[in-house]
Amino acid sequence: MEATIEVTGLRKRFRSAVALDGISFSVAPGQVTGFVGPNGAGKTTTMRVILGLDAAEEGSALIDGQPYAALRHPLSRVGSLIDAGALHPSRTARNHLLWLAYSQGLPARRVDEALADAGLQAVVGRKAGGFSLGMRQRLGIAASLLGDPAVLILDEPSTGWTRRASCGCVASCDRWPPKVGHFSSRATS
Image (spheres, rainbow, N blue to C red):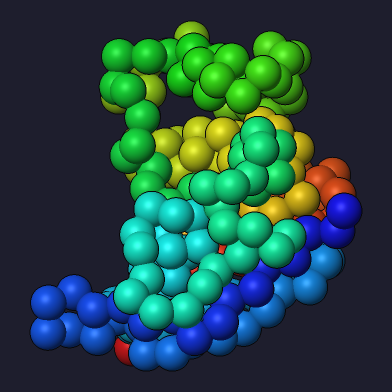
């Protein structure tokens, strides 16, 4: 089945602040959609609602016609990176990905492939808690690729990257099959 993201009429408030005010859009197979806007514009909140991490007060967010929570083996359908700090600091890069793979019934070989795709082969045995922000981002991207998903949802994926790391990871993107991508980028003034 081709992957599609369908967001309809999302509304979300945080106390008196309106985060989402009726946002609707769809992302077709092979399409990349980017959000650009200032802090507080609702980019991350939209992605969190799509992934079932936050609940909308109104509207729906579906992937292949289903809410994220209803997806069977979600890492094989949707890869995501919302917060690069969402890792256990005492685990090595490889062990971090191994427990994710194990939780989804994915083979260990996918861990090594994802680490290679993210350019992290040289640090597989290092504890993730000692990683720079850019390396944590790359480990998060490796995690998002574990299940070889058709959909990628990446929030500011290149934050903290050096120019060299950015070029290396972007070059590896050429090997990834066409996916529905959805990512966020911050506008600067």
